[in-house]
Length: 175
Image 1 (cartoon, rainbow, N blue to C red):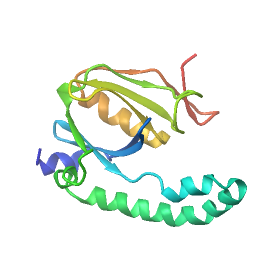
Image 2 (image 1 turned 120 degrees about the vertical axis):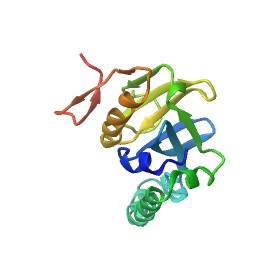
Image 3 (image 1 turned 135 degrees about the vertical axis):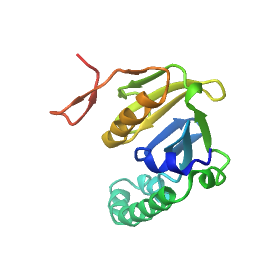
């Protein structure tokens, strides 16, 4: 997995996150050669959760703290993007790689009211090692990057169950 030229020619990485009863985990997804590399990064600040406990006063406090947190997170993501993906895989035991042939049934779905987290769409796929995974894509830009990367990369077709609604500025089920 150390083909640096494949990493240099790959589309930009995109962000996903998973929500479960154990908490949430944020991933930066890189394409390198025949693999998708899922690298964890801190997605939300613990201070965001603390501020949520104090209602309106906490919301005002988070307004002041958020800019510094977002600046540090953006710097971290820029550092991750400059680092070779092989080195990133050694940083955390939660990082994993998926070979393109291992991706089985996959779909891009709309996130609903009862689904967890605020996101633009949900990417559901199945691998032999990890089982079925559902990863939320936080922004429409991440959905666009996934649509540029995965259909040409994976041999299994991507079942796209959403379309962009320009009036609402979000992905919705086709009517």
